[in-house]
Length: 290
Image: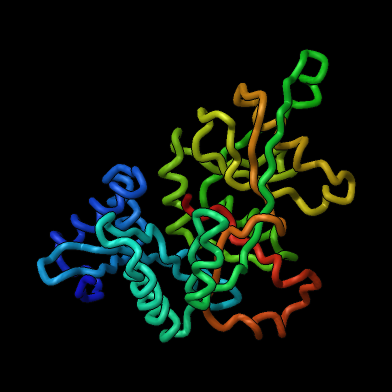
């Protein structure tokens, strides 16, 4: 059994230790971690033993607001291989969560896999933000090409945010802050990331247009179009994929099937002063950093 202290990182040595454990666990490169800390003004928390070895680590950043409350994400929660199975990460996660809640904010995290939902539920997190994720095989032939064509126009992160808020106005959702939007924009493979489709039919986020299967991290359709076709999102997703030369596509949109994020904090009374008629349990987060 390890004896350890939970603390906020204070020195460059502690930060380098956190970064090493992060990259060793998740396979990210160190520049990604540095960029995230710089862009999102992130804070690191660690469980450290008496010899200065980091046993577990967690990164905290502000992602936006949800009905007036600041939302902080606990991200890249990881534990050294020789310290796993002893509840260290659970204690670290709970410690940071309590710090966030004490200041009247909301704490969220994104379970990497479905099995972790039960794990985080024991730490008082509740599934709260949902989406649908779909995969389409197109196998386009020449006769269908005219139906698949769409126009793509680059958007700045600020412009994307304006469309996003407009299209999600009737859906409980998290308002993503500029820091996170610009970080996502800068991390995209071709330094673009955000697009307007057909002059206003939809907006989408594409982080890597070269990956296979082609992945649209977020596809938001203008609500006015949903009354014309229940399959409009599929048609647009196929058109976007075709524009990049792909014959299949995976995409995310608001929905209720897939738990994107779990939340801890007081949310029960958030909807009293709104005109929302949709189920508050189908709130939408967006594109959490995978």
